[in-house]
Length: 486
Image 1 (cartoon, rainbow, N blue to C red):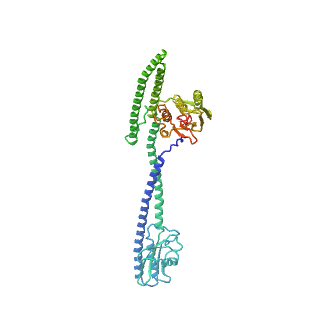
Image 2: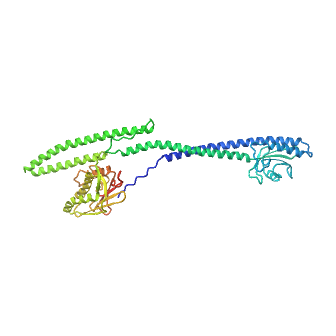
Image 3: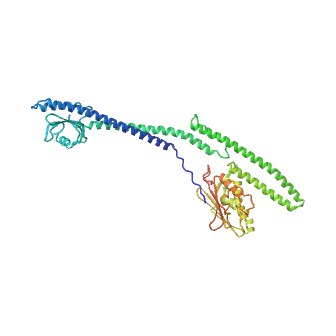
């Protein structure tokens, strides 16, 4: 039993394209900012190190030149305080002028000889002595009680002690934090604006493609004169629209030529066949050579039927079959066809069983659907031996109507099982033209359905057909018909 999957909901690709484009832009700009941030941080630290190195050299020189008397601490301390005021962009955090800079003179051990800064300097000295550093290179020192580290430069003076000048990295981190906040704000605004611009442009472009797609989907075998709308401009979308319209022109011309050829062929062949049949019927009324004439009439009928079916199959294979779709009650149609075929099947000893779920509406061409079911029942009548049973099951769900026809006969020949729906394929004992199932498959396909055939495991054969249902058909819902033939 075959089924028809529901049509998926259309989702615009503009969201996906915009998201990927925005993501690529966002990652790219973030990488650029990371490099810029690193460059700015290195530059600020380089300037701070240059200031520290210069100032500590000056303080060391002052300490060496100042006499070691009672004024030594005052002179050196005032010079250190003057140096602390030269720190650019310095902001006090607690009202202390020297909370960002400290000056320390100490030996290799013992307490500090001179201290200028916030607190008593013991924590600073302890942190400096516990830090392994390279000579003459500023380094980071984390002092207990301070949230941010100090950048410290040192110089050794003649008396063996060291002059240490420390600069808090608080202002540097504040500048970098302000830079990050401003960048992230600007980055977020640019990313959102970029997404909106990309989405608008993509949505507009894909809108033209959607219009072309919807217009093309409305163009069927009964409306080949319609064309997709031409987009303005000379871009890829307008070129696609023009290309599709040129292709539709060629298809319309080809289908028109096919209709012309088939109509002409049918007219040219049917006329002489009808004339011959009329003459044979006239001769038959004279009761002269009755049997040959009856046989000739039967052959003409078979030839006419073969001609009509061949033309219909050719048009259906080319998607050029002209349909007149109407609402049809499948249950009523099948029961009516069984009433016609039941006497013949009973005469041959065939038993017919039918199970139906009730009224099931389909959207199809009534004449073609009659012929489809007639072909299926003809196959059962022609190929089944006596005492066989033909079972029909008609059921439906939301999107499908299902008709199953099974038998307990010999089934399909192994050599033709894979080619059942090809033209002029028939079993070894078949006397037909091999067009019955080809016609069934062609008609069902142009109605939007499908056909499958297989032998049953318990013996016999099964054929399945799907067609759009009345509820699922265009402008009326979706319909599906499944037919199983034995």
